[in-house]
Image 1 (spheres, rainbow, N blue to C red):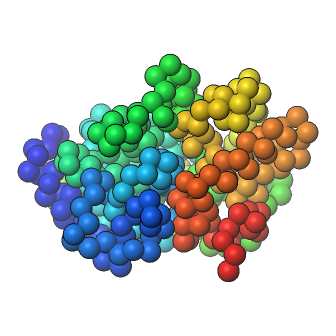
Image 2 (tube, rainbow, N blue to C red):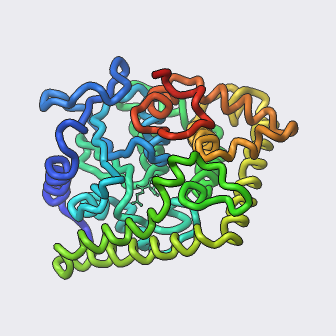
Length: 352
Ligand SMILES: N[C@@H](CCC(=O)N[C@@H](CS)C(=O)NCC(=O)O)C(=O)O
């Protein structure tokens, strides 16, 4: 289905007014990099970002925006309250190009990459480019989009996506996109679950709660819109597959072995780099994607994948350099609610 410009504007307006309550709409700028400044009607930046504090896909986008120094309205979607299961929000995502060109995700691989599993209408982040009246509904695509439109802000697009190494940078984004983040988040390591204990309790039974919430919100709109019905059915099927996946010890063991291999591949890139970052001394999108990934792994208690191996000491040095960047500090480490619970990363969090 192709939406007209007017239809897209209506969808954008409706979701802005109904999904996120005013106190969770904040104006992020270089001088106010945390969500502390309430958005007012006078604030009219080009971008609006539906995101959630803890979401790793939101971390990638917030960090990219921070690296670029781009102002935006942050619209905090409360995943724990299933605000992302509001059909109005799904309609926004279903109006994006990626939704039109990709099959719906109805199965589960452990990753959240759209190329891997398909399109999920019920997740964050979603970027709205107010100036272009366009909706971009996938973290990897959003970060690429931000790089590609940046010349408009007088910032060289080559900064995070240099043309001479674009293919190499894109290959790293694809690798991180295929990373089994979600399985490691919701599933225990059958050989010793080191996820923070409070987080373990909070996330237990998450897939079942998601299914129940989806069914409840579907009830009120079922049969009204075939596209929405298909998106609900696909998500319920995906969450059922996820539940079976993360409670299967063999699948979790394979997931952890794959993670170890991907971390090893990062080690090889860094060893060949000759500089601080993946590609020499140029900080690129590849580094944003890897740094938030390593931070999430540490949060979940998987830092041992490199910290307990002398041949991977360079990954620790890389991670520390990345965590120290201002973009990482404000978009992730100090962003309220971004990394609750974890004792593994306590030294990186703001002191109380
Ligand atoms: N391919 C999407 C995946 C996004 C995604 O899976 N988001 C997660 C948080 S990182 C989410 O919103 N989960 C909520 C849910 O499944 O209910 C992207 O990269 O943006």
